[in-house]
Length: 263
Image 1 (tube, rainbow, N blue to C red):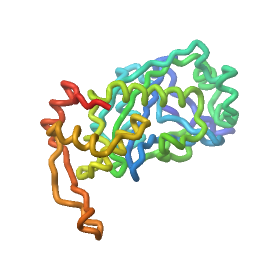
Image 2 (cartoon, one colour):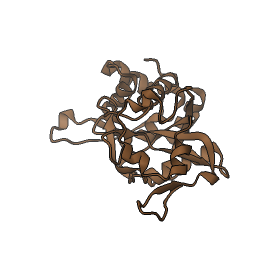
Image 3 (tube, helix red, strand yellow):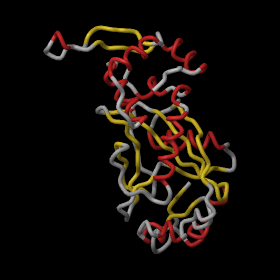
């Protein structure tokens, strides 16, 4: 999609002849680690700003395939849960608009592109937002051509982001909260074996509020989708919590109907 071209400056060129103009995909990739809901971000070269994993759409691929390709390139994972949640098309959504320029984007990243690519990327872009749930320990994040590194950030400690990417993240979180009973959150974000405390913390991070412990566990166990396993021994036998795993067939069927968990 982006390649080096021979010139005195070693410019980068966007393969614009094979791309859909004015359209892009941005992915909000969620993971859960150390009792925190996290999002994968990329740090742009020549800048202190961070960006969501994203990219352009080839003319010979559909929108969902483009999102899948971008996710696989950034995480090295296949068969990821992926869901389209919103399209962002503000009239001023372009690289050179004052609102975006105020993000203090270093000009080096812009001028590292050849002139034709700079003109193409400076036009107005409509982007489609996708959200994904992955198990962090299985991912091997990899930056793209315009980025120097990838890193996971807690949703409560996000760095400065380019463009309107903070709005995209907020919209993704809002969508998850509204659709929580219809999204396979637990099965994709939690490890195979987990405690009720981990499950509760995941829900608290998503909902951005505290939940009463005994009430939460009672409601969750009543769903009959969790299989209780051996205790997790921590050196204090009387306080060792039980481990649970998810009954996948029951869980999948319940998500289709709507889990029905009230919070």
